[in-house]
Structures are given as C-alpha cells and as structure tokens.
Image (cartoon, rainbow, N blue to C red; front, side, top):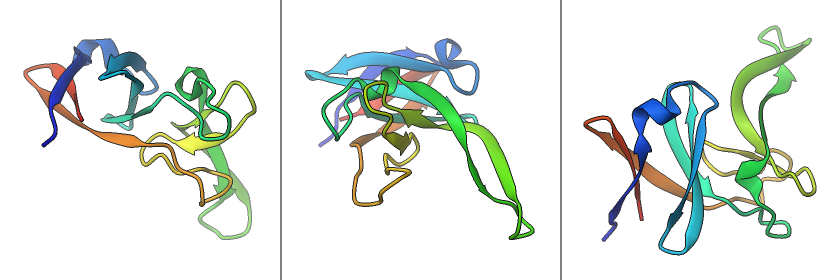
Length: 119
C-alpha cells in the first residue's frame, strides 16, 4: 500500500516548469509542474546515475500539424541529464531518444494546497 509523503505547498510550484527536489524513503525524487499538472520522477539518470532532475527542462521539436514542416512545442516537459545529455519526458519517465529506457515515476496527489508523492 502506498504512503503519502508531503513534498511542498502548491504555491512553491506555481508556474509551469517549477520543480521541487525531496527525499522519499531514501530516494531523491523531483516533482515538476507541467501544463498545470504535477509529475514526479526519481532524480537519477538510468544511463550512469547522474542527477537527472537537476538538468534543463525544455520543449521539443517535432513534425507540425501539416505533416511537412518542423515545429517547436515549447511546453517544458523534457528533462535533460546534466552529465551526458540523456532526455526524458517528466510526465511518464520515458526516454525521448530511445523507448527502451525509462526513469521511475510516482503518483502525485494534491489536497488543501499541499502536494504529496505516493510511494
């Protein structure tokens, strides 16, 4: 059964792109605000254990709606490991570059202005 762990007040994650790092049962976890929602993932890169969640948060390039041109999605949803540049989607922990890699994610709840990780 998962236990709720208080991470922060919602006001500490007021803007998209904000993040908070915390320790939950000996695992460093980051909570991000992306598109108005909260997402949590472990603060380690599966490549060589780097501090993933201390990296840059950014959008990504992809094919535009016309199917022909490139477009930049500026929603800050991808975290880049500061050690070697591996990139992951903070919403589901999946690697942007290789779908065989994934960072552990955790459920997040809010109640009365507080943000909790379930673990």
